[in-house]
Length: 455
Image (tube, rainbow, N blue to C red; front, side, top):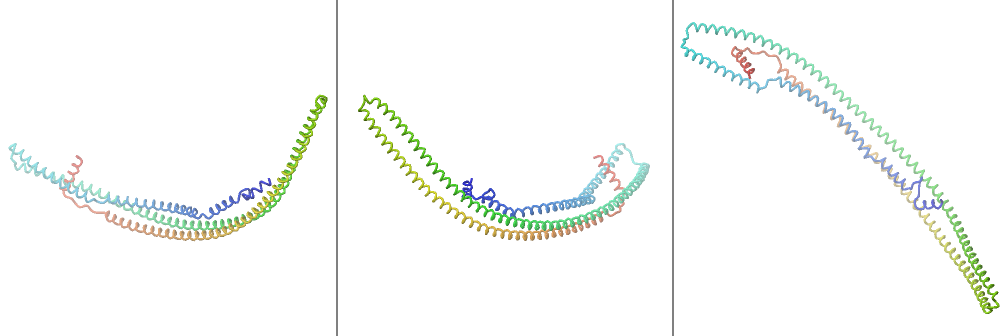
């Protein structure tokens, strides 16, 4: 476990279970999210634009409703007014009817004359008297009808005057109502603008307070993390030193144990070889004993076997001696090489540890300078952003005031236009007296009405 901790410190230094690079990137991301003024600006602009858009839509709807009311009134007034084309058309129709009546009268006279001529009748004085009496009755009948029609015309004229008077009173009441509604809408517009201005100022103030609090919290958090990081770094350095010393001691003990194990293995190898040689000697001795039993028969062979046994014994002694010397030489060379390697590894580890400490020191100094510069930049950008927002708020307030003034001027102009149109309508709708008409005109109107009905 100590060896693993040593390698982790050597290659990737950690802080609370994560490498320092992780905490650096996290701190950088936190700083980036804190000073991301563009997102805050976009969010505030979107909220302001939505509020302004809703207010503009409300005002547009109100103006459209007023324009529709005005257009309806104008259309009604225009429909009530007499059209020049209609007058010309009526004159042409009357003229055409008069010409038709004249032609009918001429044709009737011609027909009467033709009938008289055909029957051979002559006009006597009695016929003329009867004709005049008939014409007189017709004239009286016409006068009676004209009188009735005049009475009807007077009655309809009175009804029309009553309707006009009622309509004027209704229009006056409607104009008063519209004027009162316009005043109420204007008052509501002023109240909405004042409340929006007040809410905007309060939101700006709350945003500034929240921004200052967040900057203070961020500053305290960064300082606390910096102090904790320094403290943890010192503790980690002390732990690394202790781990290095313990690991070195454990490594020395491990090498010593390995050396003892190798010696034991060599001793085991030697004992095994001696046991094998002993068994070989025993086998040869048994063989020699067997040969001694045949000594009487094979004397020459006996001497030869003894010589061979002596040679084998000398050879085994030489082999054992050479094995021991070779094993001792190899052990000495191995121990010397291990000591040299240990010394080189220890020197390299010390050198790497010194380089690591120097690199950490330089990196900490560089990070401290960068954090200081970054805090200065954050303060500067925050101040500039607050100044820019205040300027934009003032400009927006000026635009709202100008827009309110424009609305008031437009409302005044609309009131003036309405008053002028009402005056024109009143002038056009004033009561008038109908001119007297003759019997000829009354008959012509009757004939026109009958012809229109037939069509």
